[in-house]
Image (cartoon, rainbow, N blue to C red):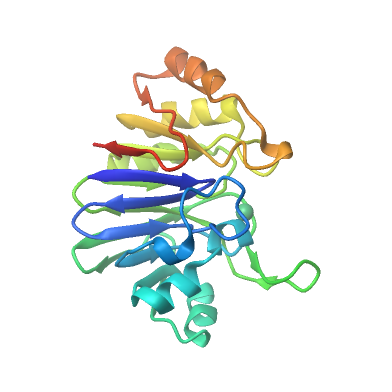
Length: 226
Ligand code: ZN
């Protein structure tokens, strides 16, 4: 599988299918591609915040990709005349040749302009099995049941926020890595704006103390083969 970081929490996986996750590209100062240049079969959206839902609807309209997200958000996506599969925490769906499981995240979720947001139900994490197993934690604090994500899905790769302020910081994300036990961990959701400025090397150093996972620090646009 090829894993490309598109900046912030956006990734493009090339496994049995092409899976785009949290495609915040328009307005993302670290975006590696333009939304019109992304091709994909499936789009996973972890929660409704603008920096995760991002360009999902526009890309789905152009490509015909199906969106996978929590039920309440799927109703909104379908109103935008895009095909969506709404599922919920603990559930696993199969789209094309890819299995997607929805797992908890501790955060909030809403859609809409500031001051006019409406609830988009729970935030989520996604475990995507398309040849290799990739856990995208979404936006979240660290929580003890991340151990269960490791027990149930044994991810090859974990994509974890380290930016602090809205999510885990490097210290929490290192503890999360210890709980999840992936082979490879990739830091995300940092450096996009000043409040979430972090040094990924600090995360790497902390992970080395806590677990055997290999830390892969990516630059936006970079592709990793796993
Ligand atoms: Zn968020």
